[in-house]
Length: 254
Image (tube, rainbow, N blue to C red):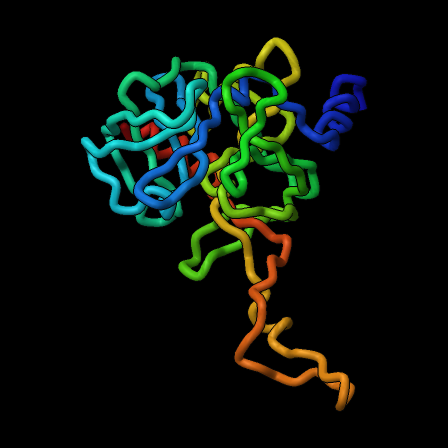
């Protein structure tokens, strides 16, 4: 095994570290009464803001979306609104807020590798780094790829998700640019950045509740657990997400 490959394997198992570059491409949003997170993604030719579909449900071209900027909440008009029929995914443009192309890094998800996800849980934001409100960061592992109730492949993350992270990007190490430099048949070649930087493997959508195993309440008098119709929907610690491939695939169609 050569030293470069060995270092690559070690780097894959290290937690990703994001800089202001990644932070500034993640923004808190509000549409109607729903709050969430959105992030900029491009394939080198086309770029859009991405978020969870349930955070902007029923949004149409010409509607106003609120985002958290340097001076507080601002309103802008949206266009090119698109909703996925398979994933909890929405893409759109925002007047005067769209970013440049050719800068999105994506990464291949490696099962058991550390991941981080960015967002604004419970409306909280980070002002420790810059004047611009930045997202908070949480970590976990890529547990695997599972099928949802419709048979669609989604990310399964071992990480404690919270309300407000929906629509936020998930990062892992070994980022590469999303636009291929060459295509030969089904084989695509991608350029890696000059320095080691994390890439996006997907987007946070939801977290799995424990609905069955926590449906009983312990009774002191009988010493056993009694079934009940009333219980707390416990966060299981498993988060679900949309793979980055599904997002890039749609951008390739635009």
